[in-house]
Each structure stands twice: as structure tokens, then as C-alpha cells.
Length: 134
Ligand code: THU
Image (cartoon, rainbow, N blue to C red; front, side):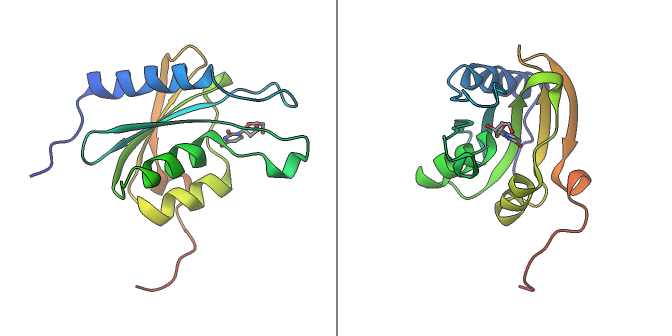
């Protein structure tokens, strides 16, 4: 039986996202984003945005966290915490990448200090996702 994460672990996930935000490389936008992804085995994988002088090559924090988790051998994601200014929501490209692995993902949105602002979910933010019939 899977035990859902308790509120304390989700708050500490958000704190990890706020720490990851400090590593963001965002000299062009000055918009720093940190992510922390909780996997089904309890491991947490971090991500931050990584910008490039060729702007379109920028990597979002969420997708960096997902790639880190996949690289560590994880495939099942439970919750994603984000730390960013005004606790904004993930971009559409990141939502589609989340959809690939975790269609029911819980998403915790926090401000730049890691203060909890609200919880949402992937089905809320991407109600009609693209996907192939399985
Ligand atoms: N960014 C993210 O890291 N995640 C998102 O979901 C939206 C945007 C980053 C990309 C870029 O470095 C900066 O925020 C401004 O768009």
C-alpha cells in the first residue's frame, strides 16, 4: 500500500525547491526557479532553470528535476514543489513533460522563500493533455 506524503514532508519538499532556486542560472531573465520532485521510493530530485545566451535553449527547473529523477532510475513521481516569484504556475511545455510520467502529479506552489502558497495538480493545470492511446 502506498502512503501519501504527509503535510510536513510536502513542506520540506518545498524547502528543497527553495534551496534549488539558489542554484538557478538566470542572467537573462533574472527569474529564478527551483523545483523538487518527490518520487515513489521517497527520493527527492532537484532542478533549477538553466538559461543560455541562445535564449531558446533555456531549460526550465521542472524539466531539469524530471531529467535528474529519470537519470537516477526513477519513473514514478508523487509530488513536485516549486519555488518562484509570486508562486507562478509551470509553463505548458513542462506540464506536457510531467504528463508523460505522472498524469496525477500533485503540484505545490511556493514563493521564492519556500513559503507555501497553494497546492494544485497536473489534471487541474492540464485538463486535456495530448497523448497517444495506450
Ligand atoms: N521557467 C522555469 O524554470 N519554469 C517554468 O515553468 C516557467 C519558466 C524559467 C525559464 C526561464 O529561465 C525563466 O523562468 C523565465 O522564463
